[in-house]
Structure formats: structure tokens, C-alpha cells
Image (cartoon, rainbow, N blue to C red; front, side, top):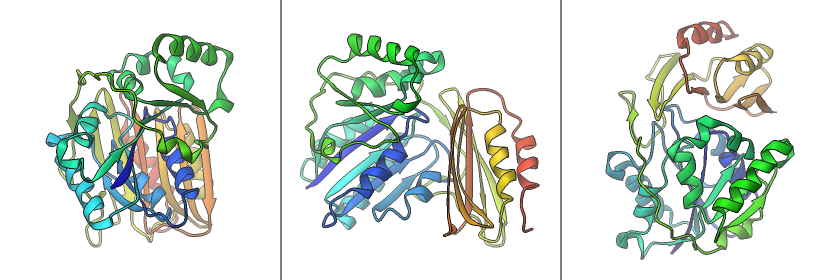
Length: 326
């Protein structure tokens, strides 16, 4: 049977960074798998996890529990039956709701296949000061469904956010465990803790998505001879716009970093080919993290998510001007 953990958290809480840390510290003799879901269509997290050594299945374009859970069932069944992993980590989109996923994982059909361990929820305590987050059903219910709360980005906390976390914990923390962390660095032993929080989680009141025409278990790809492509996705009051570029396209390093830093959006995530190799971009609000390495990815992908109106065409025009090879 496969030991399984659901790892949730709102946009920018650090889910993918945490999973990368866990994969880097897994026992060498174990085979691990990751089922990852993203709000957008272009599949950024899959690119980030591609070199982790884990079996990987992506479900881009909304929430893995849409369409009566069929995309998730197909991905889950493929990993369990073909991969036979020792451990499975499931990362839903930050705008996803946990109830249908937990209902599926606890269904009788999966009892011979998986052991559902503790659900971990990543929380940036500063989100407790953001009305858009605390008023979001998915944000509240992700926290309510968790066995363990990971108070991440401790190094970026303020007195105000720490006070908000303490107040929230006194009100909502009964029967759970909370761990403070930086950069998603948590002890791998947390994954073996049992599922204890069996409280009933309500269904989302705003569970709807608007998808691009292309959907499926593989991230968006480019048709032959097409140099780049854009996809827009919306749901729960957020809009995501993503671009994918072919392997021959390189970006001006300084220019694309400034573009990502100044884009008037809530969230930026990307893996881009530059002259030096690869740059990973991760921005939540004003928090901006970049990482470079010599090995370039097979293509370039970047996605922006925002809760308000954005002139995507203007952003696209400025992004296209940053290409070094045409």
C-alpha cells in the first residue's frame, strides 16, 4: 500500500518548495510519486519537479476535483497501478477545495491501495492579515481540513502577522499540530503522522472554473512549428494567464526578471530559458525569489495570477520584446 499525504495551502504559501525539500531528503531506497494540480494550463510546477527523481503526474487547468473527480482519478490510478510508489504526495492548486479530494482518497475503492496519513496545510501567517484570503472559502477550508499546520515563511513574519497567527490558533487549532518553518524546510517524519482531524469540511460555495479549450492530464504543449502560446483560466474570483515558449526561445535575463518583479499581479511563477541556462521565478506579492542553474529546461513557461482586472495583452507585448532569439 502507498503512504499518501495531501499537501494543501493557499496561493504562494510554499507548497512546491516544501515538496522539493521533502523529495531531496527522501530515503534512497524508496520510490516516491507526486500528483500535482495547478490553477493554470501551462504546468509550471511540473517543470519545477521534473528533476526531483519522483514519478510525476500533472493535472493543469483548474481544480483536480472538477468533472466529478475524473482527472484526479485517472492520474491517481496511473501512479498507483503503474508506478507502485512507496509514498505519494498530492499537491492541489492553491485555489482548490480539499473536501472532494479527501472524500475520494477515503473512498472504499482506494482502501486496498493507499494509507492516508496526515494532511499538511502550508500557511504564510501574513495571509491572515489579507481580507481576500481570510474571506475565501478555500483558504478557510484548507486550514480546517489539515492535521498539521505548517506556519511557513517564518523569516518574513512581522509582529502583526505573528499576533494574527496566535489569535487564529487559539480559536481554530484544537486537536491539531502546528510547526514553524522557513523555505518549506520541515522534518520528513511529519509525513508518517496519522490522520486525526476528522472534522466535517463543508463543500465550497464557489466551486467553479472557466477553462481553456485544451485540458487533460498533460500540461499545455505547443503544436509543431508554433513558437509560443497563451492560455487564460479563471475561477473563484481569480484569473490566470500563462505562456509557453519553444526551446529555441531565450529571454534577456535582466529584462525578464524586471518584467516579473513589476507585473501588476498577485502571483508570478515561471521556468525560463536564458543565455546562462535556466532561471526559476517565484513571486507572491512583493516577495520575489529567483534561482538560476546551468542546465536549461526543454521550453519556457511562465504564469501570472491575479484577483482583479489585468491588461494581459500589454503584459504579453512587453514579454515578447524580451526574447533574444526570434
